[in-house]
Image 1 (cartoon, rainbow, N blue to C red):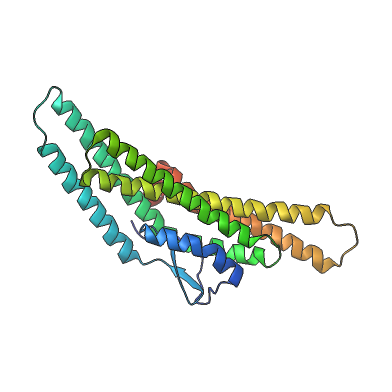
Image 2 (cartoon, rainbow, N blue to C red; image 1 turned 30 degrees about the vertical axis):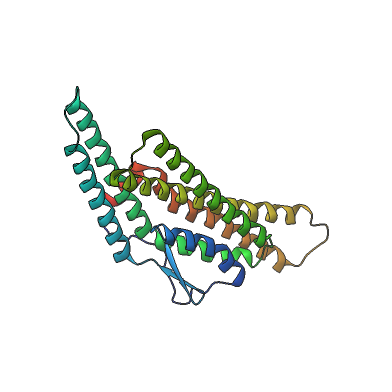
Length: 251
């Protein structure tokens, strides 16, 4: 199940330029903080995530969910339609476990693709200038807004229900992880669009003849942008499609 079909060969010299390190750092900090990291960064080198860590976290969260759900069902008294409600609740627990397993699978199996995406972005960035500082600031703002909305939602739930238990905590962990992963994906595709727009602008405003090497470099940059979009699709198609993930795991 966890055999990789990676077509990407990772080098031991995956060293990040300063600008790319600034771009990657918010993703690394936030994803690591929520136990959903796709890579590690040490001494400016980006390497695959630790599989054992993800598997232990996955096992612990699912075990917590199953135990808390069992105690929640057992601790309730009898009421009308209790069996129907319990069956529906068990179904939601099942889908929760499947979702968390698929998220963990995605983090492990697409770690190398995420790294390759950033190395490709680094190649693009060496030939296209964008406002890295502005991008990084908006990335932090996006994560902060997501956190504020999440806390607001939880607070509203506590005020309305007046209760909170382990079963609620474990479920909210998964919701928050998915929210952060989607923000991660949105910020990455935003970055690629920024590069594509700047590349197109440089072609449009070109008014004088250039040497052949200039056009070769422009073509190589465009190809790198297309390849980056392809890597992005590989990384995030599995995030939004159950059928794609299950087919990938079983094939």
